[in-house]
Image (cartoon, rainbow, N blue to C red; front, side, top):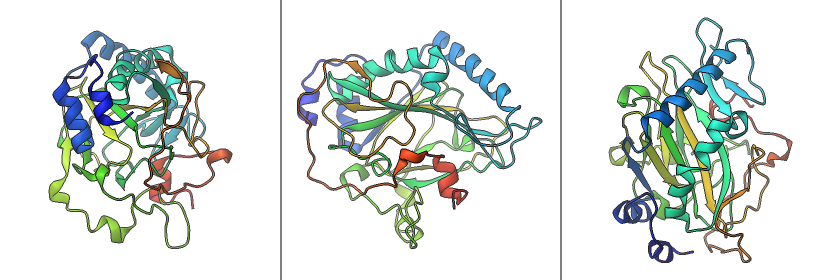
Length: 294
């Protein structure tokens, strides 16, 4: 569906102005949209996984750990596939967030993936400028990620930052000179980004961020003693079909969560870079960008 067609559909959660802003600028943020009870339950479950990570000493299928992680000072960078780790995460992804997704994808929505990213002061968790589309190309760009801050997030916590309107610009090469996957823009391209145009999406716990898969975004390092957990869920319109292997599929990957299955794929004529073959496994954006995968 085109943005105009989607905007003619009745909205469920977002305002019409918020939907229009998303399609115009490639992102939006909405403060304190998640109720306190839901947020408290998710935080409690998340703390259990942080506690469990103290017994893990190397990254694997479930946890991605910063090199400095230890039991006394856990620095969990990512809980992988939280949607299959606990029913509370999946209920959240398949509940209010799925309703929000219909406001931007149209009535037919497919779940793509979930991840829970953390930032800790002193951790290797800065995320360089990148675009998501090159990680998981689809036949069209009606693909977006909804993030939820589980704790209050300000400039000290390494908030998500975006370049407005960049979803209408080019997709960048996210490979290095030697053909290695960087998972980010090369230094030459990133140096040309006007950092003064960046919008830092801060907000209290329970706020959400939404960015299109073509939108340029990054997040700086945290300098706060408090962790910054950001729960991310990615959705696509049902008529956006993947044409490369999923980087890290959960049991819910490609599940139709709203509406009906598409009989026709919608094709955007703009090309998209092909990522590495993920069928043999995927680590994380942190390890790719820091060179740990090399």
